[in-house]
Length: 334
Image (cartoon, rainbow, N blue to C red; front, side, top):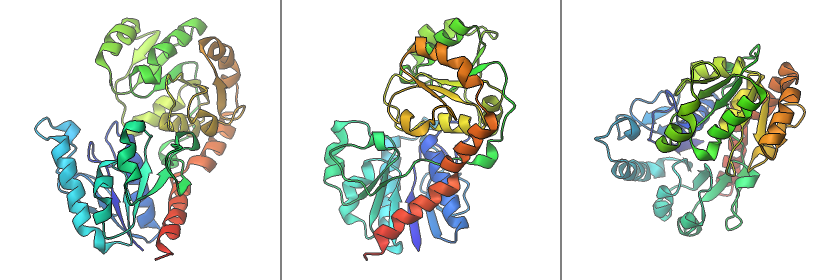
């Protein structure tokens, strides 16, 4: 089977720091190549992959103010479109833009929807000649038909079992959606140190709601942590706080934490009931009061059992197998 993977180009694949779509796409491309699939990854020129790499942009446009993302994404899609006849299928991880040209693709198009962003993009999805994959059942739009739900996988070898500790951790974008300020409130109420890690996606929110509490002692902000450091930060914590204020489509940091053996206390929003196995990998709560009450129980969960369950459910190998099943269902009828 010959597969073209149309990846995002905001950042390098895999990302050096932030870039969840690039992270998942890179793991999938490598995993498919390791299974003997002939894979071409369309990504940035500085990407690192065991698949064949093809690119029109030297590096991620988010890293270079001279690069207009709209222009380069269009060139990126056009290049993959021109080569589409070489593949048995093209797997799109670039959201809605390739769907505008889906009827011109010379191979079947499969699109993973990395978080359904709202009804405004439905026209592109409804008119497209593409099959869809959801990243969680909760993120499915009732307006679309899906081939499957495939939960993301992570590199479990890069996330070893950690010894834990007394501190709490919150890892993700610094944004109201992620509930960073809420995590600070919860940590302060239980008198535990909180380690924050992630890129700032809302500068005003950071300046007004987060930064005033960062003192290097009770609240520590590490900035964006690279994949190697992420395992250490997560593994040294007692519990990951994930008090999201929106319907989380998936939650890679939640899975990464559980793989490190660090249980999760998350708000019951979006995909969290699918992702967290209560009493094994964490607890789901409705608000800050409930989170405060659940923290001690979460910290007491068996870390080895937490990791075992998370590895079984969220390894990159499982994700690759799931996508191979999807591909077989698309290619076989042809």
